[in-house]
Length: 267
Ligand code: DGL
Image (cartoon, rainbow, N blue to C red):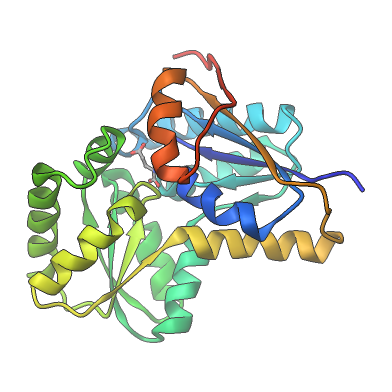
């Protein structure tokens, strides 16, 4: 049988954390990853701009043969999911619903803290999904984290200070049982976030969207067809430097990334 092609999209490297979770879960697939690094960060932009960028990326991946699209970006999921659905004719999986469902399964009726980009927080997409399942959510915008992660400043004194300040501010307003990483860049900071929570006296568990989103995609393919036995392959496209994508992308994917091509999606 033919291998399914799975398109994975993020504004930058963050979606590679979702791709990392997907690779072992849907074996036999060919993955096409697109990082719109030239136009990142999405999280500081308006809804109209985010939707335009996200639709262009989604259309590219569909044209490139994707059978299913994973929007591995919380900001694009929160602000552009209806526009993406309307623009393509393949199934689309976003990152927000799966992680909120996973949090609800593990901690029904819990108070949760959502860390996300400014645009995601302003959309209140998490708040609404949480409310629908009976979870109480506090949303905290952490606009400095994406640029720090994109710089590769994972274990850096500045990043440690910034994380502490954001969490301190958030914990003044809530006592969460779970902290949802509402941005696919944040799993790289998961250990730092967890350690900082403990230092600040919180026992909240940290949940990211990678595993739950990958599980959703796996369900889709196991419903549709038997799993192909051919090996997993992937190729990447970046709208900015290929060299930087290869260098930093490996951190996110935790394996070397060789097959990267430059893509110009315009301004
Ligand atoms: N990784 C994206 C997300 O999950 C955000 C990055 C950005 O601001 O572009 O929200």
